[in-house]
Length: 259
Image (cartoon, rainbow, N blue to C red; front, top):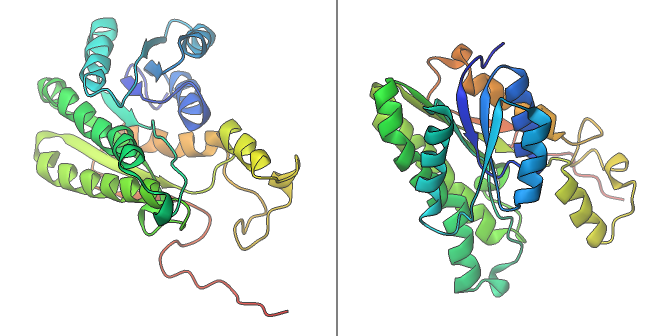
């Protein structure tokens, strides 16, 4: 098992990619702390996973929550070996829609919380002589769609945070890497596209320009990529940003067709 006996906290893990991580990490031998905002969902997932899982509830826009999550992980499992900063709020809107409240909440959840979580975990990583952090970013970090302005800014900041802290703490045995995730078929994404007016079968009718393979990622596929960075197989990988996408994000020049 690739994560045997490792204790890993996964934020935002009652739905989507985080939920898939919890299941796969436990299957690979990890003890997993589930985090979310809804106690019923967290309890249900923890019961399904069994004795290898526990859960903690907290809103990440509260600056006190990150230290609480780390403390409760230590109290439950006795240590922490890995932290996955997966939780995020996906804010939609163009420049004209931007306002201070939306900006501040997005940054609090998507950028400040990962910073504070790593800060709170740092003494425990130092005590262990090692620690793994995996930040879940987005390909929107490079530029972003025009309708995801504030979200894209937050993910760009997360990329800098990853590289800066990896450089600052690599000599202490602390590795910090990031997955910049492309379009993924989570339950929330499916429902969002229905709300946007797409038909029920929209995942099977995607143009090759956005999904060269004919489909988009599943949460489980992203979780499989995460396992590598948290395992001993990635013992020397630090400050890496992996694009979990099916086309090159930088330098892409798709075929231009004129009808």
